[in-house]
Image 1 (spheres, protein in one colour):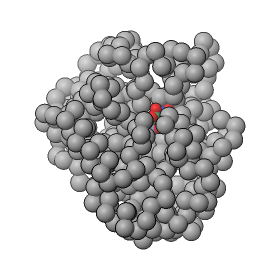
Image 2 (cartoon, rainbow, N blue to C red; image 1 turned 90 degrees about the horizontal axis):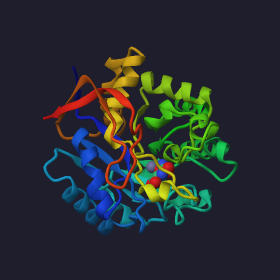
Image 3 (spheres, rainbow, N blue to C red; image 1 turned 120 degrees about the vertical axis):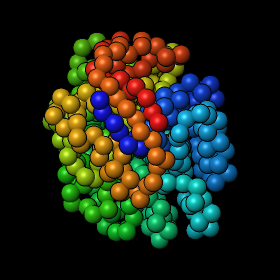
Image 4 (spheres, rainbow, N blue to C red; image 1 turned 90 degrees about the vertical axis):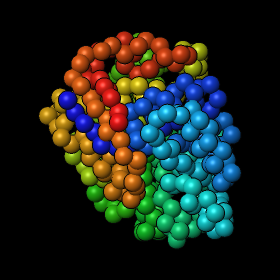
Length: 330
Ligand code: NCD
Ligand code: ZN
């Protein structure tokens, strides 16, 4: 048996409407809190939208001990706007425009983000960033790293969280830059581009940033198992099956239903089950000064098979056996 104390998922896409009702209970069942990303069809760009999105999430997860941690979609903000919204958000999420789902209104010229970043530094509002810049798809994260490093130099007190790391170079940046942190997903610990495209194309493994090379995955694994500045962010990103199994396949992997059991498998295989608590809660709490609701999540070592479909969505690891199961949450 394994008990996790107040696990938090630091990067989730909970969506809206019927999809929100379908997927949010999976996150709320297994986690005490989760960071809700703001890339809705109309992005969450002001305090009013933050509060109304939070209410819809709470309605969808009624009955669970669960705190949604809200984010604001980056745009140029005034000091007054940021001051007003600060009590309601964990941070501001920056998407370079066009890099992923619903990021069209993201930042086109990264340098133009700097005045708002200066205000965020002054007000101590963390920056969460989709760290990819325009360029060849396999190089986009590497191309963004000099930008991240420049922002860290220009705004030394700004906390910067690089979301869903996929490369070895990005891991090394964490050691060089003081207030820089990162999330790592479950799927980037397990996949390389070979799994997505090396045989028949696998639309349900297609996500942004795309899975990279074996040496990148190995560096991510080492970081997840031991690095104090990384924490779990599943990037669970459901799309209906018809949007995935289609020309123009949508990017995103729905991993919420399997996240903790599959992480337990992974940490156990690496003889590091004692490190899982740090990865799924303590390190994020330390970086953000978070105090998630108290919740004990008990996993038992019992094999089960991941369902092939959950409503309109195919979950990650569909049809595969997992060795750990979430038994109870109190
Ligand atoms: C995410 C989505 O669908 O919202 N997709 C994904 O592939 N990860 C957006 C994102 O985090 O890039
Ligand atoms: Zn995401």
